[in-house]
Length: 151
Image 1 (cartoon, rainbow, N blue to C red):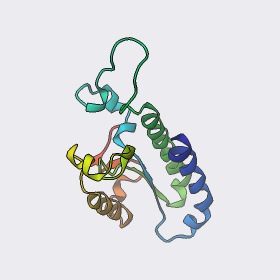
Image 2: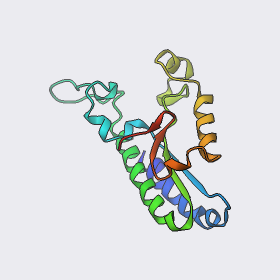
Image 3: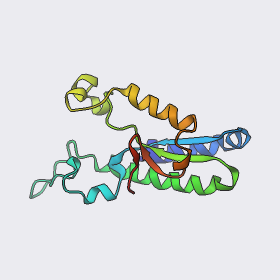
């Protein structure tokens, strides 16, 4: 998870940095999740924060601590790239598409739809809006369709 979500994102951004600097409207979008929000871990009513059973061993099925930690790390990586590029005019965001009907954890779109996941076209339209400049005021932030996410 760290290789994909953090190291891969960092290496790819570094590899295209010279191209970004040549762009008339350079933008970098890191795909994140609200599961990477440290603030949300303090909200007991947030579903993924349900208590884990007492005793040992602990069973992490559907809890995804590695995924959550990798997205929190990615959010910090985004902040660093936003700082690195600040004087160059490159806009950078951590963008949360929300819970979408995909093949997340091998479940498939229909199973996720039954769990309340939204149509991925909604997320695609949100990403388009960021790329086209509708969220420029939120550059350097952790965002979702409804606004900014607390770190």
